[in-house]
Image 1: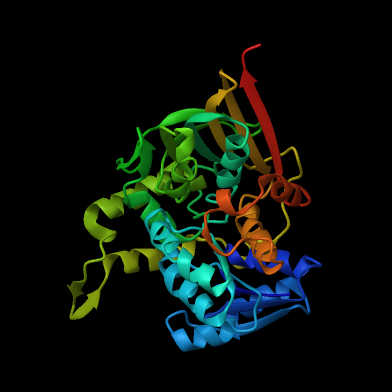
Image 2: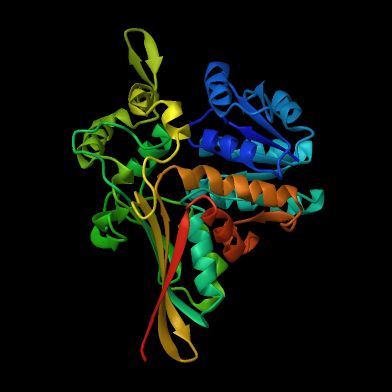
Length: 389
């Protein structure tokens, strides 16, 4: 089994490469990236004969297809802007596809490729990271056990860093978009936009994470979950997070820059040079992401010293009685589920376990065996059921 990881030298996808190289079901992992120096750092750290490096520019359509040929599955670990061209390259190369999310709007565009993937006998699973990904399967688990559903509420709780820590937790472009683009929620049977950094509420997570302030954020789970379970009467669905796991002051500083126009994609002239303010801001902030080896390092903690809990609460009716499911997925390394979840999905597709077509995780995958695989590396999912006696 050969799996190609596009953007495999990235902060999340490097974890995918590491996991795939350690999995006995996988024979070869192609680490495909435009940054060969970073790719070599990742490959040397993993130190596996299964890993090979190939240079790829996702803007080079022919070159991308050539890199993908002969693979059993493609794991797209790049930013969501490239999802559609990489999916189309997979169609040309005859390769199954998965990614880590399309930030709502791109996910809806990707789903329109389902007929083409079916005709080609190929599978694609969209938004299969930590979040989106894990919450979709949590929602699926609960939905299968309820007759009707009133609400699906997702809370991504991350142990806050010290207040003076300026680090970003993952892709700077994605965080910037999540910070300045209006989050979408599903309410009373339709999607609607809300202001960024709104909808605050305090939510209790498993100790030692504790009580965290949660706010709305644009995310792909909300793009698909209410539609997947629409026949059960879903009235509400949202995604909330605590400052993307960063220090509140850092988020507020970036928000100030965005308010002053540095998040704009409109070109401006500066001393005879044309620049895109957002590109400049993202480039300068990228230096505040930890080094790649920090993402590859083993967890500093052991269970139950958790640093992150992904929670989905599903409230509905079963046999005429109101029931609430709370599923919490816990990890001692915040980035670990983001890299491992799509790696498992890629393996399942390569094995032929997923039907042809383009699907969100809640439709494509059986949640129980998936959570069992995560459990093997101490990513633990707990279920709580609340109902009257």
